[in-house]
Image (cartoon, rainbow, N blue to C red; front, side, top):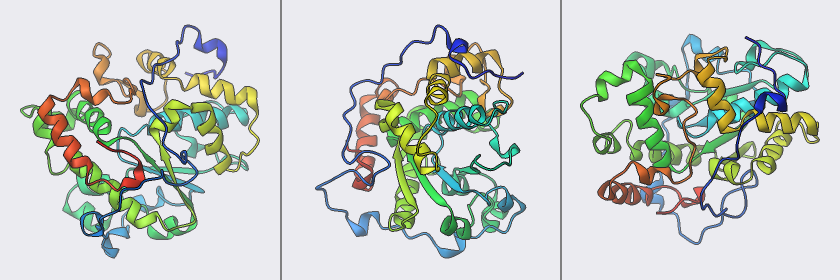
Length: 319
C-alpha cells in the first residue's frame, strides 16, 4: 500500500508533550555538550580490540557503501529519524515512500546505512557470528563515510528495550519471561550498563574524527525542525524544500506514526506492532523524555543513576 506523505494524511495528529527537558549547549550536531566534570580515563577508557572491527561475513556488503552511517543502541529514536529522512527524500524525488531507501539508487538520494553495530555484536547471534564480526560496520567504511552517533538517555533507552524484548520480540520473550524489569536492568548483555559501555566505546573510537557527529534524541524532541534541518544539511541538503520538509516533519510525528503502524500500512517489519491490542508492543511507543521513572522502582532508579556516573560526561546526561 502506497503511503502519501501529505499534510492531509495527518489529520487529527496532536502535538506530543516532551516534558521538562533543558537543552545542553552546544546543541546537537555541533559538537559535545559542555561539561566541567573531568573524564576519568581509568573508568571510561574501554578500547575496542582491533579484530572486532573486521567483518568477514556476507552481511558486510549490506553495511558498506553508505555516504552516511547512523549508529545507535536500539530504542534511541532510530525509527523516527529513518521515517523523517525517508519521507523527505522519497517526496523530494517523487518516489513511493519506503522505510528501506536502499531500493532507490539515484543521484541526490543519499545512501544511508543504519546499524546497531557494537551493541548487536555483543547481544545478537552466536560465537561464530561474533568471530566473523557479522554485525559490525567494516572499519574501512567508518574511515570513508560520515558517522552519526544517535544517542538517548540510557535509562529511557533501557526501558524501551526491555518492553521490546518482552512485548515485541517472540524469540527473546522466552528468555525474559521469568525475569522482572529489575532483573533485566542488571543483565550483563541487555542491562543499562551494557548500553552505557557500548556508548562509551563508540565515543572512544570516533570522538577524535572529523567525520563524526553526535546527535541527541532529546535535542530532536525539544526542537525537531531545527535539528532535522541540521541533519539534512549534514546529508548535503543545505537548503531543503520547505513544503516537503514540513510534510516530512508532520508525517514522522509520533501520533501519526502510531496510527500508521496500527493500520499496518508500512512495507517493512520495522514498523509492525507485536500485538495491536497492546500499546506497549508498538515500535512507535511513547518516546517520552524521562519516561523511565514510570517503569522503574525507586531502588532501580538509584541503580540506574549510579550506572550513569560511568557514562562519558560528554554525552551530556547526568543523574
